[in-house]
Length: 266
Figure (cartoon, rainbow, N blue to C red):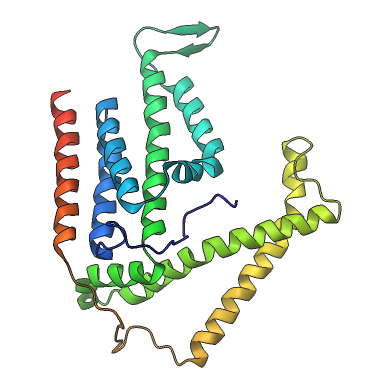
């Protein structure tokens, strides 16, 4: 839980930190589309180079970013196994009775596992280099045309910000509750799957109570400060595009062309 980096922000003055948050959101949207567009290992190589360049530009250690995979390693493993055994092909590579493993299944399982890993690492890099308030302003500005359709743009942006802001807080609260329950004799590691699920009850109940209490305190604090959403709201920092945003957009376009070329020719 301590290694969950989604929602955490580390201030800095790097190239990625100085990008306009709207540019980073658009690049992240393009990155997500490219992750689902890739159909070969050459495309994942292009994405890996793109992500590595973003990490080096943001001065974020690769090892620290790789730690974000640890909390979802079980999900990645389950995804790999399911696609490995349930994807059929022409000639079995390995046959164990009714269970058959095809080369197509191995390839597709690796692709799906890489897809999850790349998605999590890219999302973590975005939150590490962009403050929740900047993400809120960027999302609200990008969705501003929807206000004419009476779409609750500001409320949606605020919900996203609050959710990102409280992920590290809830992780820290979970760690404290686990240590407190372990000091009282709770065992979260031994036993079968059912025993482990039952052992989670002393953890989940106080965690939910704490989360609802924090939400109620936040609502009271916002009401006490006469918060009324986006009506005639001003900003302390206005967003402006700069030359570095054009450079980042050009690099993203170059990675996009590389993946599209890989999709067409390979």
